[in-house]
Every structure is written in structure tokens, then in C-alpha cells.
Length: 456
Image (cartoon, rainbow, N blue to C red; front, side, top):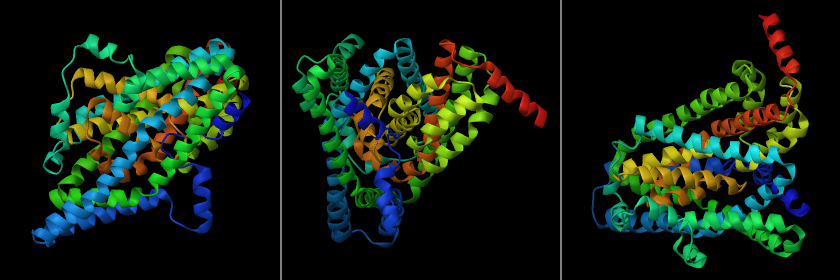
């Protein structure tokens, strides 16, 4: 399975951040990055829509040809392309992610503890995001139901089911029906089981494992191709939205950004540090001070892959964490620990639900927590794939995916902060697991504390 390990380490970036391999050629040619193009498309679409709304009188040309014709067809076409990718991309990515996780059983308790910690912190991150979003209510005041009627038809199609039936529906009776219907919880469960079994059988199923790895590569490439159309798709979707609602969308979008940033700060500086203190007894303030240069580096590059060597070295020299542990947990965290992306998805769910006037039940919130947590295991290391997995989360509770267009442009602005949170979570997990294994040299950590006090 060495071929798979090698491939995973070269694609272990944050779910929706810019991949160095992809962005480098564009930078060398002096072309705009995809991030810049999407942002330009967002701004241009908003300006174009506002001009249509306030300066162009209503009539056949504006309402039917421009808004209901060109903007609608191109925008919905891009949405359909994203929906087309969801099932095969998530399925292949999860199988490959589970294969990678299956290999970690050889590392015994370190692997088990690391996986449990990563999954639990991701679930906590989504809970924080949902709480903050419901506190700020970013989607209130943005009436998307008047722009797109999909929300009403979607909510009407959702049937009320009991909690027991909801839990049983996670288990597919026919996985092919689950794939065809896009039942994401069933797909996630089957993909995880399949990936773990492939990892367990090892070389005996080498051909099948390579097949899924190659399918995953194909879906990543297809996603890159579709995302190249994102600036045009965003322009048309946002243009249609602002042509109908005008300036009323600006305040909710600002509230959405604030909610995401606050949730990220809570996860990074409160949740992580409480866990660190509880499980290790180490001083969280000193931990943050020592690790802050790595956080700043991750923030500036928006790429967790590039921080792996720096994280391992900082943990060893300033925290006293054994490289034997960190050399496993840090790269694994870059693959499956996507707390920052999970926070974005949690806030986005509430934002879009409020914008479309859809009431979310406690079971809907539980579904979001479960779906986003499990999806983080197989998040592909390509630009903007977080938006694809967000489509999956939306589908799991019946939210209209058209809402993604509202956040696609500004979401990229939050990318750097999410990366810093992700790598901080990796470091906290590594320190806690190493402490449980007796692999933390407290003298090194305390020496750092003494040096800090001497400077003061």
C-alpha cells in the first residue's frame, strides 16, 4: 500500500484551500489565481445585478432574457455541474481516506486516540458554528425565497420521520439506490466500511485499491475543471440575486463572515486550549505563544501542507513533543482534521436556511454534525472542494444548493483563518496524544516558559 501513502501525502491540504501544485503554474505566468477570479466574479455580479435592479426598467428584455434567461441558465448550469460531482467525488475520497486511516491500526493506541480526537474536535467545531450562527442569525433579513422557489418545493418534499427511522436510514438496503438517490449518509457509511476493509486486506486487493485511488484522482481533476467555471457561475448567480433584492444582501453577508470568524476564534483559543489544559495540564498561553509563528505562517500561505515540517519542528523544539508521534499525527491531521472547514459549513447551513425561510429541526442539526464530521475524513486536497462537500451537507437536510453562490466569493476570504485553525487543532491533538504516551518532555516546555519569564 506504499503507493497510496505516497499519494495521500502529496494531496493533504485543507479541504478548500489553494493547492500549491495547482496554483504555481498560474503564478509563474502572472495570471490571476482562481481565488481572485471568483472574488472578481462576485463583485462584478453584485454590481451588475444592482445596476439591473435600480437602473434598468422592468420588461421582457430584463426579466425574461437577461435575469430569467442568460443569468438563470448559466448560473443553474454551474450548480448542476457541482451537483454532478458530489456523489462520485465524496464516495471515492471517503474510500481513499478510510484506506489511509485503516493503515494507522499498525500504530496501535496512538492511531486510535488520534482519530477519535480529530473526529470529536470536528464535531465540537460544528456545534460551536451552529451555536454562533443561531446567536448572530446571519441570514435574517435576506429573503431568498422571493428569488428562487426551489426552497419551497424542497421543504415540501421532506417527510417527517422518527428518530429511529432516521438512524436506520443511514444503513443502506441497496447501496446502488443510495448512490442513485444521493443519500449521503448511506454513501458515507458504505464508503468508510469499504475503505477500512481494503486497508485491512492490503496487497490482496491492491488492484481494487488502486482503482479507487485513480478514480479519486479523476474526480479531483474533474472538480478542478468545473471550478474553473466558478467565476462565471458566481457572476450569473449573484447577478440574478442582486437584480432581484438589491442592496439588502450586503448586511447578511457581513454577518455571515463575522459569525464564521468568531466561531473560528472560539474553536482555536477556547475549545482547543481547554482540551489542552484538561488532558495535559500544560499552560495554554505558552502553547499559543510558542505555536503562533506556525499559525501566522499557515494564515499567510493558506496551505496546511507547507506547515507540516514547521509544525513538527516547533512541537519538538519548543513543546518537547516526540517526533515519533508528531510525524504521524500532523500529516494525518492535514488529511482528516478539517475543523475550520466544518465551522464554515455549520454557519453556512444556518445562513442559507434563514435566507430561504427554512426551519431546521434538532434532527437536522444532528444530521449536519454527523455528515460534516464524517465527510471531513475524505475531504480532497484540491481548491474549493469544501464547497462541493457543503453541497453534500445541504443535500443531507434538504437545503437548496443555490445558496452556496452567496458565500462562494467571500468564503475564499476566510480561507486563511480556517487554515490557521486547522493546523492549531493538529498541534493540540499531537500534544495531547503524545502526553498520553509519555512522549512529552515537560522540561523543554517549562524551559520555554522560564525563558519567556526572563524576557519579561
